[in-house]
Image (tube, rainbow, N blue to C red; front, side, top):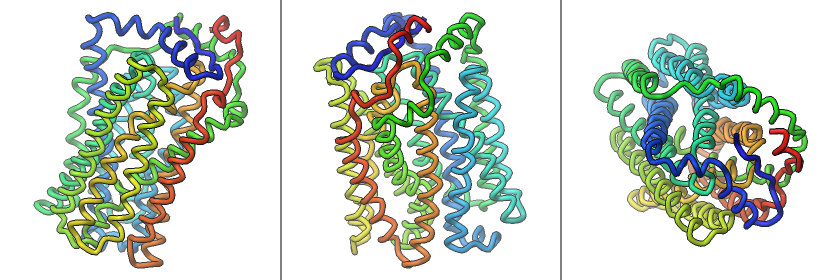
Length: 447
């Protein structure tokens, strides 16, 4: 039975309570290690496929035939990029409830089929309404990815050792855009945009075979349901959670981080083609470099932070240093926006997003695992995911509007710089263990 953590006012107490968690016992069983990492690899590949189906639209939006087919303006392009995130945000909490109630395996598989088919169907849509409807379906179904993945990681990895696990998962989340943009561009150049959607959507269904064969059913048993019912008696309401300054701090940090990443997923291809004059294939290559960079840095920095925590303790301080450093390096995006030389602009385009990888895994481990009491991780993560999806909905719209108003990407990228600075300051000022939502002292007995 899972031990419930009680947040105290000292960082050392947080670390000590986490080290005492029963998950450490599971990690001590070598015979189960391969299975844990194998499922984690499948989750990473699932995230990769999700992001391929999420970002392929951005490559299509740079092509004349696609824009002419749907008669798109810059503002229309912003709305299309944004549509995914509105349904994605709306279904975060329902999907979190679904994986808590029915486990990870079956809900993930059902949603996976839906988003792959909806992504493929974009290639068959005759009008703008059909395009938007399919993007809404993709967003709703992909809402299962984050709550399912983090539920599985939380149940199988100790928080102090979660940086590497989150880093492996984030390899898929970042390699998805890295692979998806050049793949979509190549398919459009050599075939057409209709076949690109059909191929990228349907090919992903192959993933279902190892998922259904290798992953054990985690449908909660009657005993687990009893424990879950007991945990629900812990009197921590959503209003109590939202009254925590730390929770609001995590919302701001997640919004600022994701505003930049979602800009890159939705508008970076157009920036590289329209403002920097790259061909569609060159755009795909430089997008690959940027997202490959953030993926590798995220994995390495998550692993490095885990090792430092194991040696020196102080998990909150160490992860905060990595998060702030990532925001600081990402601020070089402004240098790329204002560069007059194309090669200089491309260098900072890759360096800024790669540097943000220092933030990626450590921010997720810090805001979603280390600082949050175990009995309310699900509820807090649901709230955080809404903020993340809000960034995805707002970033494409504001970028499209600023591009329409100014005719340049300098203004949208200056706004990104401002959000990155805000994110770093929020980490320093607001992410304090003593400001976390409190769990009643009798929570452990109730659970």
